[in-house]
Image 1 (cartoon, one colour):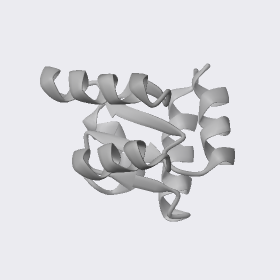
Image 2 (image 1 turned 90 degrees about the vertical axis):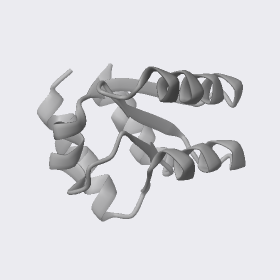
Image 3 (image 1 turned 135 degrees about the horizontal axis):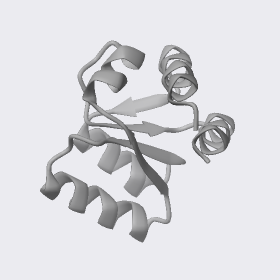
Image 4 (image 1 turned 45 degrees about the vertical axis):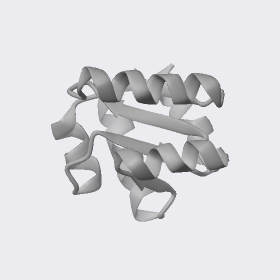
Length: 99
């Protein structure tokens, strides 16, 4: 995995408005079936991680924990702990970049 490529592509996805950020909004997007993939910060609290892991497992949404807060902020311009990718093509590309 090339972390810089993941950061760059996250920035592109954000500018293309194919992301949802924030814990509550991401949780709602997962439950409504809009989310294709979730990126979670390495620095997230244990409780938030447990909640989002349970939700992604239940709704069968892929979740990755590969970036920290600073890297997510670098890509999006916002300090966030989790980001949902809502576009199928972009989620597929993220999956390729990470694996």
